[in-house]
Length: 371
Image (cartoon, rainbow, N blue to C red; front, side, top):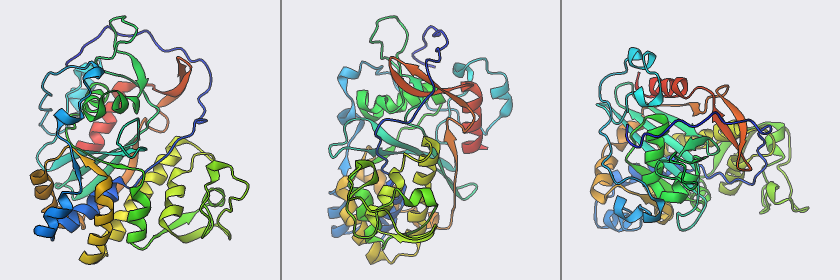
């Protein structure tokens, strides 16, 4: 493994972790990908080329921040053999765990939600979209934004050890290239491709697809605006009106579904990412039943808010396979850290999640994606 550093002393727990900072969740990434691919399958024409021209295609050289001070070494190819538990049992550290990349029948793409029109700042949403042709499944893994990780090449205090920071800071420091190296170093996954969206795309997609039916608890209903209300619960405006009625299934508009995905006050980041994956799953399922013209309408409005390092040719090649994905089973039951695999710690005044057993977490993650 590249960028090996001296091991850091155990982090001291300063106080209990609280989700108190304002956070924004933009959860339309998976739907953007699937709807977009489906539409492009049947629009490889002059109009299709026009649609492609709306996407922000960014090769690696364009997204690399030279001030990030990270290695320019080529990425490893990734371990391509089938999942072998013995390789993980014998590992004494993360560096001993095989680096996994795309293998025959399995392709991993990073889905990013950036709370910015310019695709700058921290990546508030990070989901590994794993397409498995062998098992006919699409698996989504949420990487929690507040997870403490080592950032490759970042050594602000000049102590010769990679700095510890929250996972979502890696994108802010060095865009996707640094984020991908951070994931490689901390989770032993080589993910080279990404698709990102900014915060404007979710209501566009949901409204274009006719809204979503979402089952709400009593607490969740207090955070979702009533029909016609344009205020948000987290704005604390006294004129905010929550959804009226009893807990149950409601047909939500794009704005309402976005606010559902942003809920943070009633529980935890784990529940927040669970809601996030639910919205993506519902959008994908909804897109399966849409006509080509409906998908094109939805995609056309969303394309300017999509950012990727795939080339136009790669994007079209991927799109050509999109139809078969409509029959795949969607699985969303894994997140990093795992539910009982972390503790809350404070570092330099910031609260975050420390993974208790990194080797076990990475082993379970690889097993979920590759076994």
